[in-house]
Image 1 (cartoon, rainbow, N blue to C red):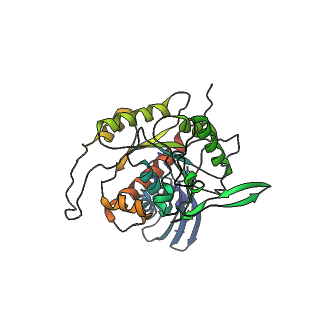
Image 2 (tube, rainbow, N blue to C red):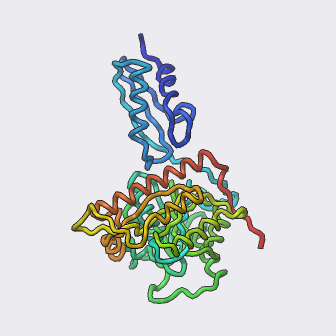
Length: 366
């Protein structure tokens, strides 16, 4: 019996996208079906190149064709991706950016910037177009972590308006207030000044088309955080904490801020940084020197995803100091931890875009 396109679609309609809860055909994820005798080829369009379930979906497609179409079929499956967006931006700012992910923390010193940098690099490592905005106006650390402290961004003219061209490094586009000021000078601004600078920063950078823009927020729950969500529609927030009770308590405040009714930015999940110490000479040992499980307990309490643990590894600190982040270094443990987190964040973005209302700019009364 001849193999037909209808039979292939019928078989693939039995394959579920686990995160989105619908089959591949209903989700319009199957394209370019070609049949040549017993040779079958088609493309599966995932919602993110960082999909952690890619191999499982591919195997399920292969099994469905063999069982429901022909056991003799020679199946060639191309796994591709098309990042989706669910943002509504009447202000027309960053219209070419599909998803904006803000990385926040309740307090400083928990490694938020380290996580933001390596999250951006992890997403890019999977093939996504990624930008990194350092919105930590008072303490910009992205230039040091990416090794671009001595670089200055170029200006270009777009439709008669000057635009800042972000610095490209390790496959991502990066921009920071630290690239525009003398690092020997402290930024001494009142809250309104910082907010005004951030607004200009967001609108005046020529990001181009991006799948994800990762934003490194300053610690706390102040003016900059509110300015960010009032200026552009934010897809979701990632919260960074460490295991200590004091850090977890402050992270809880950040979660509550984003969840306030008038803000209502979805929490994509929480990451526990410096979760445990593993000496290089004892790679199988884990020492929980700051306590254990604080972020996991908070994730359970607020019913938000736990995105993973980042170990306390000397190479992460050293890499950040010399401008070679963990994701591009050669230390496997930290690289694998951040890669797993990047996949889970992308997964949560896809779930959020499929199941929740479109992201909007937050409107708050003064």
